Image 1 (cartoon, rainbow, N blue to C red):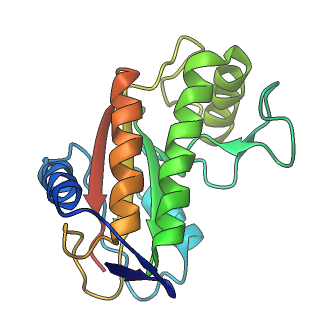
Image 2 (image 1 turned 180 degrees about the vertical axis):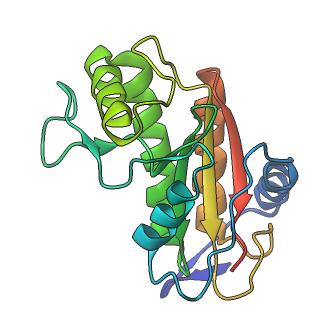
Length: 194
C-alpha cells in the first residue's frame, strides 16, 4: 500500500520490484545534458529557464511558447519544450514536491514529441519560434525529435533517485519512456541540484 496525496493505493510486490529496477536504470543512465543548480535566488521555473538560456551555451528558451496546430488547436496549444538543447534535445523542466506536476511533465514530453513527429505544422512553428529566439541556432523543418530530457528538481537538497521519486511519477515516467523509445526517441532524466 502506498499513501499518496491523501489517498491509499495498492501496488503488487512483483510489479513494484520491476518498476523500481526500471526506474533505477533510467535515473542512473549518464546524461549528455548538464544543467546548472536551481539556486534560491531563482524563484520559479520561468526564472530558472531564463537563466539557463541566458548563459550563452546553446540553449533556446521555449517555455511559454505554444505550438498551435491542426491537432492542438484549442487553448494556447502545446509547448514543444521548456528549453531546446544545443543538439536540439527537447528539455522539459519541472520543480516538484508532489507527483501531479511530474505526471504532467511526462505527458507534456510525450505529447510534444508526438506532435513534432507527426505534424508538419508543429515542426514549422517550432522552427519559427527557435529562429525568433536564436536565429543562429541550427534547426529546420526536417527536424524530428531524437532525444527528450526530463530535468527535475525536487525539494531543497533532494537528489532524484528511485527512493525520492514519487511512486505515481515512477509509473508515469516508465510508461512515457516506453512510448518515446518505441518512436525511436532516447530519453534522459537529469536531476537538477537545488
